[in-house]
Length: 101
Image 1 (cartoon, one colour):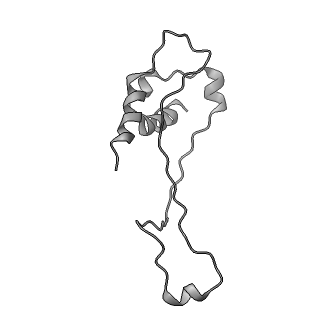
Image 2 (cartoon, one colour):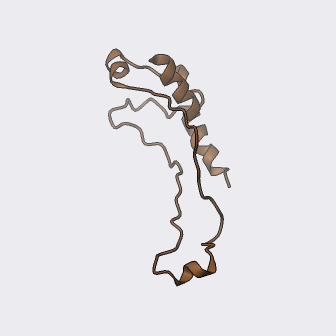
Image 3 (cartoon, one colour):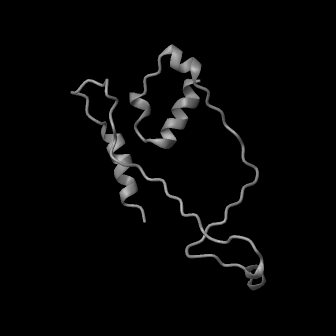
């Protein structure tokens, strides 16, 4: 179990594994699974809709739903001791998103 959890957190936040502490209850209540993806597809483009001309005559909505996922400032647990700062690896991970296009 720990090996799967550590591999997952390593992928998400570099440096987190060294500080990760799972007690027995957390470990037993957390399931990490791996699923092989044999086939996937995505439609990704910059700009607006590009449909066939005849499709515009159809009574169907066409458009784009913009999505984004970006971290903001870390919010500590209210019960966390006041002298515990946000770890450098968390701040670095947040900053790494600011430099992305």
